[in-house]
Amino acid sequence: MLSGFRISVAISLILTVTVEMIAGNDGLGYLILDAERSFAFPLMYAGIVTVGIVGVCISLLVKWLERRLLPGGSIQ
Image (cartoon, rainbow, N blue to C red):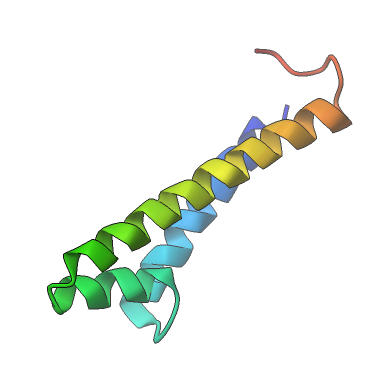
């Protein structure tokens, strides 16, 4: 039921990081791009992993909310 919401949240996370890379002066997207430009690859990969973990946590949160708000309405 909330799968469309989960997909839109994932897309918004991707767009947020992309906009930070293009036009931001702070944030994870800026950190990743700045670390790549200064050859700080461990920091760059730490930022990428952090974005991935945030994405997984948000997806799990939406799944949990779906189970709590719509009991029996979720198709697995």
